[in-house]
Image 1 (cartoon, rainbow, N blue to C red):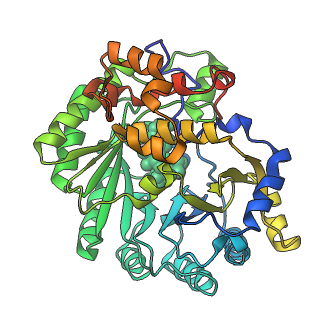
Image 2: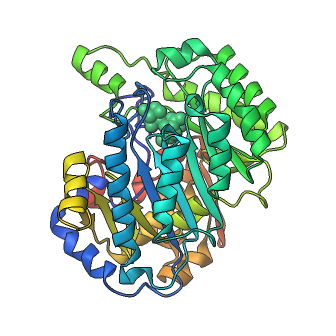
Length: 436
Ligand SMILES: C[S@@+](CC[C@H](N)C(=O)[O-])C[C@H]1O[C@@H](n2cnc3c(N)ncnc32)[C@H](O)[C@@H]1O
Ligand code: SF4
């Protein structure tokens, strides 16, 4: 998210939830335990997130909880703990008789697991749960971890949406940023992915990798269009506190090597134009899709509308019956809770007020590009255009939004600044505090 300054400073972040993670505390864990042990809120969709925290290499820009030095035995230990967690979760009263509407294998790099490890994981999960009724099963992949047989395995395991972290098509940029893969691994994997015929394939790109130039960015976009995936996600490079780059900048007091916000936005603007020209449509501030009817983004849309998400795996974030929670983030503690103490590895939680849930849903849905006033009136009893009159007016004056009595819409400029538009809607006590 940008601040007033145009430099990409350390401490920038994406807004993926509200209230800020820094406000979640261990002393609120009773709230999670209470809702886990009660029936679900009627008509609430249910999703499952599984975190696989392993990667071949740590990218210098990455802020996720990842391990790069684990051997097969340690991975098996983790996978066993994850299976045990799913077993415990599957017995919770809050499951009700709800099928999973969406499942998300995220990381880290889920495709770091071998075909054999994956099949064994899924076999063990199936002893307690299934996702036969899920409308979307997403699996995140790093190109260099893929082989033809692994892709076939993913298809057999029921993956419907494969998401590939390409980030950039130029080897020198990939190397500079510490990516484990090179471009030839993308093209090799792409043929296998096409042959497997997943209903939906997404690719991730980042605007503003270190070493990025205009020429290189144009090349990225034309290569992405040639691959012609169902959806393309373009992140603008952020520098949260815990990345390698951020530590270098803070420790060595060097200038940020990441392009400034104006440049990253100009690149994103160019990308939108090219993708629209190639028949894609803007589906959120980060995503373009080929066919809105075919790609339904179940995970994103359900989550942004306040669905339940059971989070499993180390440091995972979940949300159940109106309560946020995060699992323990230390490997030893995560495993000990499950394997020695037979309990869920809950780390911290927060029970937002109804108004905070309204803020959360409003800011997340604004990233999609539009808000329907009636929807919020019906769900929260609040007319959002009146409630946040000044904030919306300021954004209109800045050319970010249009507001009508029924609908608020982001302009192109608004799409490019989406994350920066959101903090003014936060409650006063959450303005200007640390987000993570
Ligand atoms: C969990 S990774 C995807 C799967 C796999 N680990 C990989 O990188 O190929 C999720 C995505 O987050 C994005 N990402 C990570 N760190 C970022 C940062 N500092 N700024 C912007 N995007 C970032 C990358 O586009 C990455 O593909
Ligand atoms: S961006 Fe992906 S591959 Fe790179 S360290 Fe992060 S999770 Fe791992």
